[in-house]
Image 1: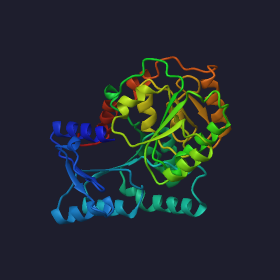
Image 2: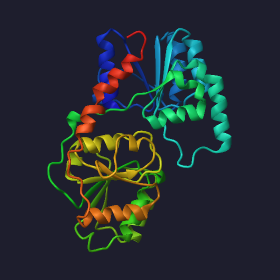
Image 3: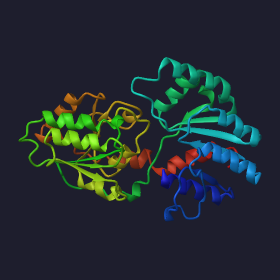
Image 4: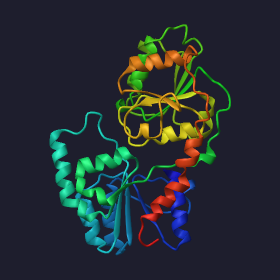
Length: 338
């Protein structure tokens, strides 16, 4: 999202609209030079916005929220402080694989009744998200809800230009819900002769790292699976792999999938979230149900044995439909004063 924020800010300035950005735990970053950034400094970003508005006596024309919960009491407070503002709530939130508990579902529906009136426009970053906004908060919101897909800067990705059949990449925050444990289970089922020259590099950090490394050792996969930590050069690194594996249980609309495809690297992933809005099985990736590691094992076996292969350039879809300029322009279109 960093490149989206920067380009959105640039486009607003071009039409004389100043943007204040409220971030949580922001540390100075050269990439963001020129943006007006206020850090929440440990408090919630919503509360920081409220406190700062009162302190500076600012009246905003437009309020846009990203990566926050929808339909909370904060939206009522926003409208009380900025009564003439146009409020847009962008939903990036993934939903649990088995859905919310009955108690939480009822609470969300009540919150929708209480607080949705303080939001002028809802935006889902996929059709999946659009559906769940209405399911969670009320079908009456349909008239003021729309889909604007996330996009990426396709120009920064180096493209894979040769067959690297046994090289796979995983890019994920290392949590249980990313399902990497299922990849390790799948690998344990595959004929060891097929795995001889296989390399699976996992980029990311997180609280589930120790458990994943333990499982890697238990399955004797140390020569195959490599934990690489975080990297700021994934736009270049993707091109060193033939496929990305994403065995996730929860997803909203995955930027990693867009990035992988942009590098001409097909994706092996699950049916969750908006994944199927970008991927078509055996065309630009391979699809399996979450937690079905036996199916994942069969997909990998078919690839490693040469029975399955994707040879088309999978980057064209991203360049045509999911590019960052399109995302920015569609966001600007829903702002009344621009």
